[in-house]
Length: 336
Image 1 (cartoon, rainbow, N blue to C red):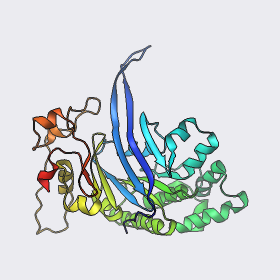
Image 2: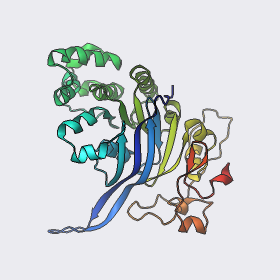
Image 3: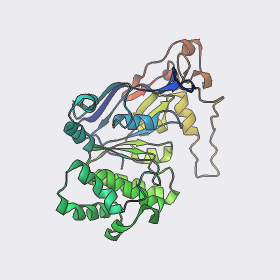
Image 4: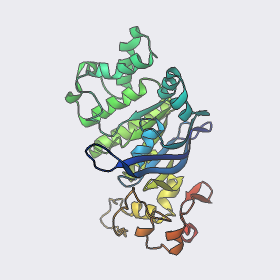
């Protein structure tokens, strides 16, 4: 199940930027000597009931993008529109009540199921804490709601009295999902939710997310470097490289006919469970350039065998080369 776009866009991101300052070393005074271009002018949308996969190498800005949407990392600039409202203005200048209301609709499942749960709190306390913060469930209904959420994610009511260290990684991730669902969100940012889990457990968590999408009508931003899971769960996929989105299309098109050289290299690394079938692996030369001083022109040009002088001088725009298929490459038509 891949999610379908029902009723238009739930979230629209326009020209999102997040820079982190780099300071010089000093005993008494620190001076900004540069910026890490973690997310650099990206735009995308997520429909109602849709899953958008966001993929790329480690350090390309995927997690920072997810955190910036929820203002867990404050964006440097850009606009985040949620259900037609400017979430950036609400988080920046709106009342605490309005910001809290917005945050209820946008929740996150964190990457590390071992570090995202407070070891001193019982599972009941962890899942019921959002009720206290958001005041969205009457206190006398807390127990009933906690047990319902545990059942929804495949756990038992008696698990509520246990502590996080008593659970496996897959169970902890289920608890993290239950906590995100506690406030009835419409969008969940799932940041590498299966990366630290065994293969068999990964399938269980992915099936859980897809079942929840069917039952609750949720939208997901699914962040991962596991391309196989992205293909399974996402209707559309966006590919990031060094803070920029370089290709966006339906997952079917991304995986069957990629049009950006970086996407081609990523897909060539997917293992094929057939020893008789040989796959030509594309090995990219060199290392990922520094995000403090990204290359001029196309950011992928130092590692691209197709790069020309134009690529080194002129940054390609993310443009539509086929219906619904956007590519940031001057020569994308050559790969069609």
